[in-house]
Length: 166
Image (cartoon, rainbow, N blue to C red):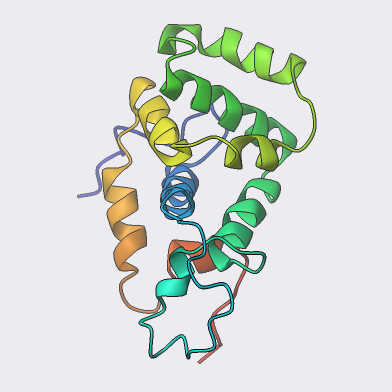
C-alpha cells in the first residue's frame, strides 16, 4: 500500500525537500572549510587523504558546488532561500513567512549566492528555518549522504555533474 507523504514539497518555499537537504549539506561542507595552512602544497591529494578539500582556496570544489546550486535556482526559489535563512537565524518567526519573503524580494541587492555564502552557519540556518516551517529534512539528508546504488552524492548532483552512462 502506498501512503501519502505527510510532508510533501512545500509550496510555500517553492523548493523540494531534496533540494533543501542538498543545499543544507553543501552549506555545511562549505561552513566546515578552514583557511589554507599550506597553500603551496606539492603533495598528492590522494596521499593527504584529500584533506585539502576542507581548505579555502580559489579552486575549491565545495564552494563551486554550493554557488552553482544556489545560482541554478530560479529567482523565486533564491528569494525563498533567503527568507528561510532569516527564519532559521531568528530574524523572523515561521508565522511571519510571507513577511520574510516580501522583505527578501524588496531587499534584493547583488548576488544571492554571495550574500548567503558570506553567512556563517548557513547550513544550520537553512535546516532550522525548514524545521520551523514543519519540514524535517533528516531522511533526505541521510539519503543524499549515503547515495545508495548508482545515485550521485549531493555535491555532484547540485553542481550539475552527470554520472557516466552505463
